[in-house]
Image 1 (cartoon, rainbow, N blue to C red):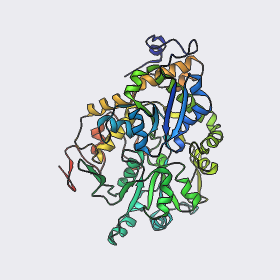
Image 2: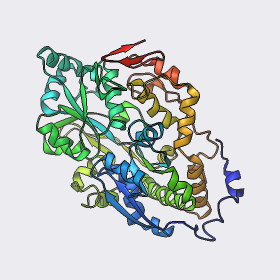
Image 3: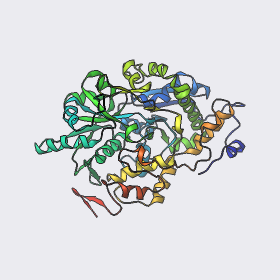
Image 4: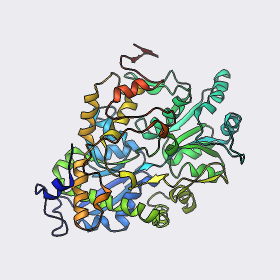
Length: 455
């Protein structure tokens, strides 16, 4: 779908410009859910800075126990919308897990995750990691350095366990991507075995984000992939070392989305636009003036009702740096991106990447056509709602016209090989060719039957 700025400005299908008259929202009292992660920031900022109220919305923000409870709340109507894993609306819409049509008009951020291992595993990895001239480890660190460690555990008959936050989370797919790029099998799903551990060298299991550090400290898992501040928490507690950020894994990769039911949007179209406007304003504020507002954002997020971690822990990654080993703090200005690089635009190509990973690891059991990927992406990601909201903000003088991709067809330019850790480029327009290019994972004619890949 191509929506030009000129066409949006002349459209009268939706409403009069917001500067002339506030949107006639169908529902003004709303409850949104979130998980205690720094990338829920657009919700907290839209609330604390009064952007929701500017749109005539009276919002309650409520932390949720885990991602399943959050999704069920949106489906059941207890929540009107939520900070979601990008895979959740897609998986629900295609019927993997709980089935429901969930949409997103707004992507919440880029990057923001890391992979951390325990001190013990880090000590075993270090002999396999190249060093820089100053003696510090050379980044990005490949999972090839973990492979001999995993093989040693296997030789001793010990399972190698790692944690991720949810079966359709970015964290699951990023951890799998990193392991596979280093020559390790992260395991498959099948229609009758949803553990994701079929044929795995590394056994991945679900752990809620705030529990990651303590679970690793207890020895239940040897490492994990999670969003902030739970990688930096391991550094502060002295129990683990983040070995790679997702920015190093795939530069400017998509992360969370704001999800709501298709039914809610159909019944409340003006309300949905108003929500999107407030969230876009929050994202602009988070990134403007070279992240000048980040210290204030960190103070907001450190409050118990939001993330509830120490200010210094959140600031360690939120203000342009990232600490690996204790004292090894490096500049990573784009570790958290909320608005730059069209971060908030819901690109179809982002949706397609998540769907390819579901297929790669067997969550989608059969091969699908390229057109199927496109159709599913367009049923879930709604750039037309986003651009309508953006157009109104430009008219109000609250956003710059140049900051939005008015002429996009919904697909990003292909991600070049040098921006991805395994050197394999990604083009969302050709998902099957992309899947064929990945050395580990299901190919077109393959399915998982019992404990083996067939075809």
